Image 1 (tube, rainbow, N blue to C red):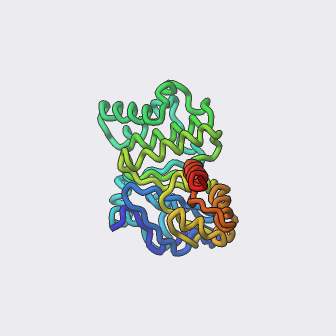
Image 2: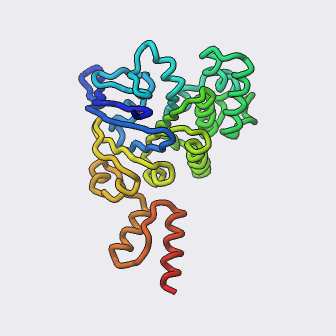
Image 3: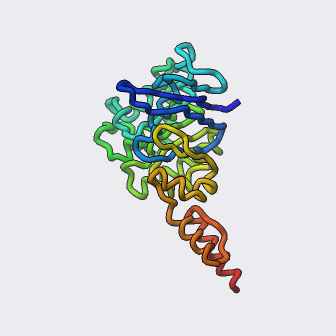
Length: 277
């Protein structure tokens, strides 16, 4: 039984717009999954099905083996938390602290539990100093952290991030990558995210789904997907610079270990240099 699964998921918007076509997707506990593809591929529509925001035209979504229904929908939304691409879509309270507390209060938790969860979420995102600030006066990166904190205060087992690095500066991206990579091991969470930046896939994911025109057109580990440049080209994406460079060197006879991230590439070059004596 998968932690989270879709079976032959199809969604047709009004006007006969086929956003998803027979999508089969699965996530396990503590996994890090990237969903990549061009604009309009169906990534956001898929994500909105994972906790019942949207209902399938056909097919089903299973959470811990159970389909999402009106009866269990509230429990599902506590189990699967979604952070939208634009944080302004889910920030609406007068202060950061009130915004982070909104979810726990809304599900009926007592005052002590709410306060504890808010403190933990603010600390985890490093935004304790923003608690009294007006959310809409914050920077884009700060708003993103507030939106994530609001979801984490619900203590979900699955965190879904739609284009989490959109609008972030390089330091904000680095901080987000470090934060996301802590969640599976330290908190037992499953992380599912979409991105156009394929260099982040190597940093943040164990497994990849490639989408195009509402369908899953490829799956595999990071290594398997990046080894298929024709698949990425089909979806108007490209292999990131580091694996592209390393693969080119190997094809030209350089004895160097394959690498997908900056740190891996640095080790590969040092090892190759050491072998040359």
